[in-house]
Length: 389
Length: 141
Image (cartoon, rainbow over the protein chains, first blue to last red):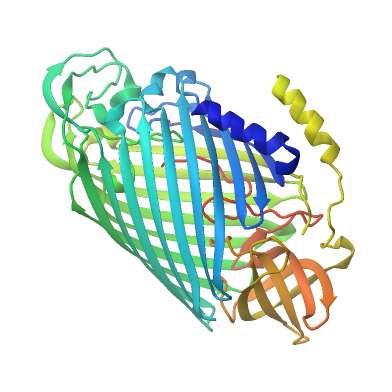
């Protein structure tokens, strides 16, 4: 598969008839004091180099994007992600259009996370229509298939979204959204007996190895394959956006999600900063999230964003453990507060950004009672190659 | 390494190349006003239709047709009555009045950079997304 990505990239860049229309390079430096987002905070820095290129062929667009991320303290978690795809727009009339995209992705991690190497295929179809000049209807469907090196994580997912918004002359927009999703783990496992392990923290997600704090090794449980297992979620979201002239915007949003059927097949789930973990995603929780965001345009055309998010999540099928790894007989519940500040400035050929986040997560599983600081600094350089239109 | 050298040989001659020239940097203007109408129209041969905003200038009440981008920029939703500030290249065409090819749009405290300073498009493929300049990738928290 990696070989095909290289062929596609070479064709996009080198063929005279497929000369890319645009090409961009970006670099970002990220720092955190809590890479693994748990109570045993560990600092790390992550450098990410990316490229993007595309080619438009009438209404069809081909694109490719690659991203290499290096972790300084945990170099064995370093990874490369490659995307390549195409999209197509089909206008229905002057107020409505369909959009389709087909995308392939490969993620390749170094040794500590190589079980999570995957190849995926994504299909996305969207419809957007102006019902009137002040209200928009949107709908989309997405399909994803991921094939992991460790097949326990393989899944298929489907998601449907419908939204409707209405703008009022007070410069206020109200938006409502309904989402439904279904994820099917193709080869989940069940737990059987306990086997002690050597301390190795990166594989905890999904394999039930218990806490791997170096001072506190715990046994994990062996696993065997079972039938496919599905999780069905449904959510309702609302948003109020208020514009205050061109230079200030305020958003308030809320989202409530329910798990309609199924539950996480994993014994243990977690999230890492900047590194994807297949056991922790929108299908893993039930609960709500509310947020607000203030955006400003300050002098010299600098964008400034301030955001706050509060979430309360329960993780069906995931049992909380004490710090020794003993089950507490409770379903894991997390409450999270997050603030984020981001500033961005666009120059003629490049743009720079700086962002900071603080997260405080409280959980009835004390291992996930944590807080962390996250800094990012980045630059993107754009190189136009195609025709100006 | 070989691939990189071939890449340079092929790519470098294209820098500074003048393609068909629609965006005239000498005709750049800045207009602030209110959206009066939204439509999707084909603007260029063999290209996706563009999102077109009819903008009424704040003080003069003059109307401009503002070309935003191909409608695959599904991320941003404009509505009639919203206030915008547009920087772009002005051109006149018979039967279509005053037109602006937008390079930058400011609204609700955000700036959308649609083209670079020379007018080269900044939009991109993949789930209908406009290029989010400088956005950090892969954050999972």
